Amino acid sequence: MLNLKLAYRNLFRNVRRTVLTVLLIASSLAALILADAMIGGLRNKMVEGVTHLLSGEAQVHRTGYLDTLDADLFLPDPDALLALLADDPAVRGYAPRAITGGMVSSPYNVAGGFLYGIVPERERDVSRIAEAVVRGEYLTGATGEILMGTDLADLLEVDLGDRIVVTVAQVDGGELSQALFRLSGITDLGVRELDSSAVFVNLGEAQVTLGLARGVHEIAIRYAEGEDSADVAHPLLTRLNATPAGGPVEALGWMEFNPGMGQIVQMTAFSTLIMGSVLFLIASFGVINSMFMSIYERIYEFGVIKALGSRPTGIVGLVLWEATLIALLSCLVGLLLGGSLAWHFSVNGMSLGEFDMAGMTVDKFDAVVRFEQFVNFPIYVTILTLIAALYPARFAARIVPTEALQKTL
View 1 (spheres, rainbow, N blue to C red):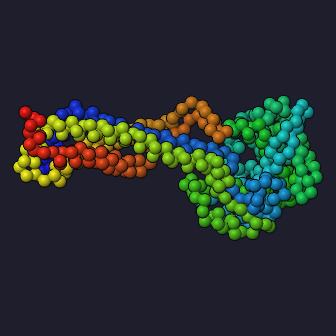
View 2 (view 1 turned 180 degrees about the vertical axis):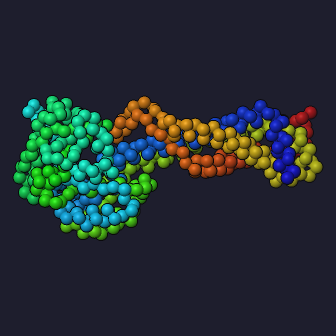
View 3 (view 1 turned 90 degrees about the horizontal axis):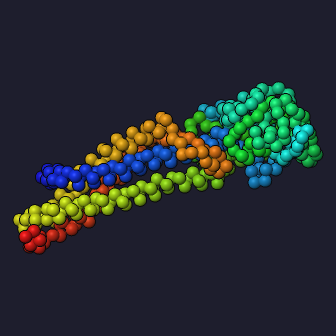
């Protein structure tokens, strides 16, 4: 308790230096909290852009389909899989799809693209196709409806109600098949590859055109809890892989079927660590400088107490108590400042300007405030402040009384 009282007294012997040191450390903590909240928000935005836009948080295919996108690798009997998904409380929504490449033509032009056969109501719980319709109407299930992206509509020089012919190769033989549609809606998904090549029709018409009978190429899944999307070993995936569907089944989380984006998201986890290391390396020099200045101002006092028989461990404890009080004050100020900023941007969002990331347009995102930011980061700050104070404390403990008294004369 004596060391604590002395440390508290010494802390305010030079108020200006103490305030500047506290502000330096507090600013580093606040910056770390805000940076982690921003990175978390950007990471969530990227994940949602990948999983909520079209692909889903997990997918089920015939084994080998993702390697070749071969239309012949389809699930001929998906009923057991769909029934399992319908009964699982971990599933928010699922959407069976038929997918193939083909030619999309209008009376004015022709282009290559991907045909997606979808169940309109199922897609509302998995993807954002319905929300992306900027002109016309979303699919209703009526015969002859088709959606396409803005870029593809411009290329084909078509407008709502115009005729669209889709030509594809049927499964199990490759015979060409054509189907006539009327453009019912134009979408803007915000991804160039989709807006310039993807067309969406009702699943039943796609199955007839491709000769799939009741088969599908893909079942996209969205979990009830967003945290489950990062679990590549989710129990649901294990059950799906063991469910017969007329052939070998492959159920994968989004980080497996989209490894490129998965690696980008994982790399963002190191951003906070790198930024925190740089910030507290700078702050540690401030702590060392402040502690040394305090020691040099009181070098006569240290010389006297050493001459009176004070042990080196007592002096080390005194200096570390001062560092602890500085760390606690810094954490209090840093939490108030960083927490306020993070909360503000979590409510009002943050815009860094419109930019493209992995083909996806990002403009505004919400910062993510987590409980760990207000517990773990202050603990790290306190520990690193004490580590930085060890060098000045060791110096103070090794002061020679006679030399200290001579320096003050």
